[in-house]
Amino acid sequence: MKSKSILLISLTLIIIIGVFVIAQQGEEPEVVENVTYVNYQTNVYNLGNNTFAQTSYLGFVNYYNGSEFFPINTTIVDSSNPLYDYEVIKGVYQSYFKEDPTEGPIIKFMIGSEYMTFQPMALQYEGYDGGLEQISMIQNVVGMPNDNKFLYEDAYGLGIDLQYSYYNDFLKENLIINQSSDLPSPPQYMIDQGNITLNLDFVLETNSNHIVIEGVEWDKKSDRTTSDEVYIKDEFGDVLYYFKKPYAYDSNRSFQLLTYQFKKQGNSLYVTIKTSFSWLNDSKRVYPIYIDPSQGPRNPATAVNVPGAYPDWFYTTNVFASDNSRAEQELTIDDTFGDPLLATNFGFTIPTGATIDGVKVEIERCEESDEPGESLFYEIYLIKAGSPTGTYKVGTPFNTACASEIYESHGGSSDMWAATLTPAEVNAVTFGMRVALSNEELPDEGQSITYIDHIRMTVYYTAAATNLQVNIADSWKTVSEIKINIGDSWKTVTQIKINIGDSWKTVYG
Image (cartoon, rainbow, N blue to C red):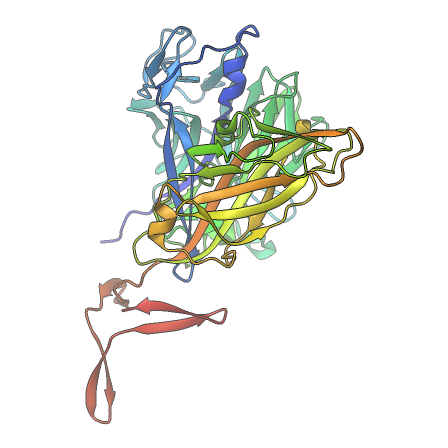
């Protein structure tokens, strides 16, 4: 019996909670203590050759109803809104769903008075020359809720479903192809041309018309393509929500970066998620496949100023999320350095026996200075067991205004920062990073305020060897023991290693 194959194409909308909270008539929110409002969301990616990366982010578990906090309830229930059939309103954002996916905008996503709607359109192939071959328009089926998911079964024909999932801080749209045979082959002329993409189209409507693509507001006069995050901003330049980078993953967690296309036709805004057909059709793909822009690195759960003789960091816990609420430190001409900011407790769960291959630290930052660019990252250390370890990285000068803040990346998949790390040390609440600033070139009586919006980390590792498997008659069998014959004598093999990039990796034993 063949196993069931599933392909998922996803669009994920991430909310920016900070903007929603402060948009309450300009009032200062009440400080509420002892309220649990975040938890960990974890993802593991297979990078090939038995190597992996683990990333995650924090998610909200409570919402504020205007007077007090309540646990978020993600269950989709009957709607009190006459325009929709189902809803989730007991959360930090609200979503509404229609039963019939052909009835125009079928999904509505709201944060306060700001909204966005989705109208699914065609599923089609696009050839090298831009020619299109439609697979199906959205079908007249009946959508049904199941806990936090809303499924339109056979929305694009038999075996091709459309599903929306409500999570605490993001809404996800999945195209589900249950078996590879459910997806028809492209026409031969497209195959001959090559470079085919599978396109999922939908119409986007929002009452916030500022869509920022690669740092530039889209003028809606020309088509734009990107594989980066796309931000929806209000009239003040604050981010309301955003589409994360689109990736495809198979069940072995191998991944592929995808492409968004934004275009305007008439009065409608179209968004297309493009997936390489050659990647989908590769014999190495392991089904099910997930095309999912929702993944992200791990965030800290602890961030503090390390007190010393220099200026402090304030509002340190603002680095937990990319929401334009920032930690800040002010340095003047008299301050050679600033006290360090320590971020730990990233919540990693690296498996026992794995080998740590590298660490990447990303810092989203900006500054306000009498002479922009004079304040810089002086040192960025990894923290192990609460203390700096290895060698530090030096950042580039701060020369970015907060209206266009960026992530600065340090380290990578094979960069160990001259440190030694074990899974237990990385998983500990005392693992993290430390950053300290210098202000060596400010003019007389000058000052600089440095802001950090977000800190995130990714840890790359090679998993411990597992049992070897062999394929016999299209069925994978676990090998319990390996023997080789040496001089007419059978010897048991206890370990097998392969060399990858001048580094020996254990694959068995």
